[in-house]
Picture (cartoon, rainbow, N blue to C red):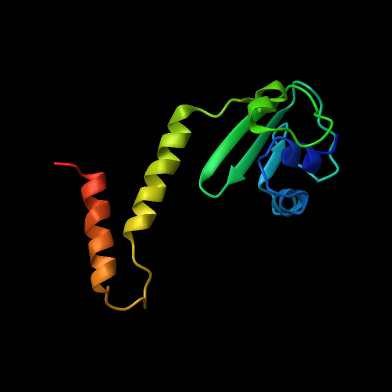
Length: 125
């Protein structure tokens, strides 16, 4: 099975065209090498995918006939991503949420209340 099909079939990307775009951008590696969309995946092979600020690692267990439901994904891919990577990505997302973009102007009353609510969520007393 082609790498772009496999990434789509195990639900890492919503469409094959998104998978191809990520592969061509160099965000996907197979066996430690930058891969091409037509790369054939084999059982036991290690695939590394950079999704925004999260580096995910998978071991290929098989190739599904077509796109599979989420409960069946572990039959075809083993997630080797360390838990610390998920925690780091979650913390990065929290930090991004607190930053207002430059030029956004002064916060409205609604924005201010949302920021206060969010900061209470992050730092419960």
